[in-house]
Amino acid sequence: MSSTAPAAHAGPGRFLMVAIDAGGTLPPMMGVAAELVRRGHDVLVLADPTAEDVARAAGCDYVPWQTAPQITSVDDQTRMITEFETGSPLRRLRRIRERVLVGPAGFFARDVIDAAHRHGADAVLVEGTVPGMVIGAEATRLPFAALMANIYARPTRGLPPFGTGWSPSRNPLGRARDAVALATIRRVSAGMTKQLNAVRAAYGLAPVDELLGMLDHANAVLVLTSPSFDFSTPHLPSNVRYVGPQLDDPSWAARWDDPSDDPSADPSDDPRPLVLVGLSSVHQDQAETLNRICAALGRLPVRGLVTTGRAVDPARVTAPPNVQVVRAASHQQVLRRTAAVVTHAGHGTVMRSLAAGVPLVCIPMGRDQKDDTVRVLRLGAGVRVRASAAPEQIASAVRLVLEDEQYAVAARTFAAVLAEEARTRPSAADEAETLLGTR
Image 1: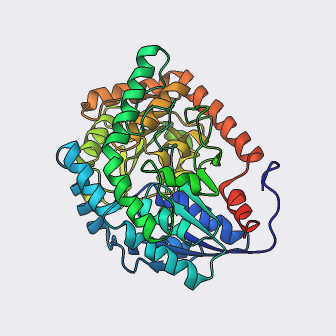
Image 2: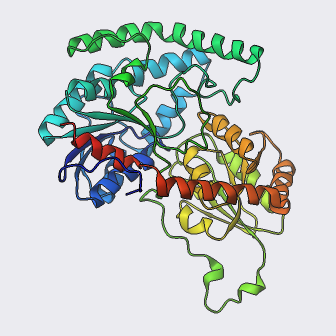
């Protein structure tokens, strides 16, 4: 526990952790659950069947959704993601609204309430961007915290809208841009808010005036990143806490057998720097991009390690002799010997890389990745390459971060910031334990 941790709680507690398997959001939430188990608490995970093995590996009990829609396999997850990311923006929003945000909100809420009561929960920890889950947590009348597994995502004055990849505005024109974007988001989501208020009323809860306004009713909103990484604003609600990134590898990330670890090998025989490649752990139509990255590394005097994730068969990636392709490997283990990371700039990969002091080549492909990339660029710890970049352009970017020491220096400098924050600031588990004192 950090030196500035919240006040001690009275004895072990029973937590309900409510999650959705959206790829990068699941491992950090399970990291919080695993830490609570290590501290002697009992944790039940309510999530998709694809999360069962991860939950049990964290030492938690597990129960699937009973009435809410489920992601039952990686193939099912891939089909859902493809549906959400195909077509016009309006069509994508309609599908997400119907499948996640609004359509099943009552079912999510009911399952959360039932699981909390069956488990005898003392407190609830819930994915903060899925309204039905938050409604259920509030309707239990138990203390609860909403978790955000990357940067702060709620539309807020003074912050660029989530997903835009914008930097904070610094002049009247930029502030006008952000104000128009915020008003547009609220106007587009007004219908969803009205429908969710009907669900809230069914559980005896007061209406809210915006889509994620219900987060104001949580005891705490725990943002699982560094306050020094995210952009800041004085307009954050008083219950928002930055609790630092969860850096644990997912349980399915196996130990990497580095060929240079062969006792018969002489390390001086291969002085080439190691470049780690990690794109999304779920489907993002990334196989073709992985092939271009491999072609780029084949042009350089480096060793490459490509981790394809659960959604891509390594056999779909054509690699040159200096590149090894595996389904998964422990990034924490690999990063200790890595000189640069090539990534889609998902939050988990970015934070593990920065915590290890390793500079990045960011190739954002959607979701929160532009947002993470602009924060990496602000730190000076990496460069950005377009998702459509040719192999020679990717190779040039990798060469730049390897040869220009400023990127590694910036990454190591921020690694020291993360280490100091972890030592001195309350963690997510610390904050979760304070809920037990409000029972």
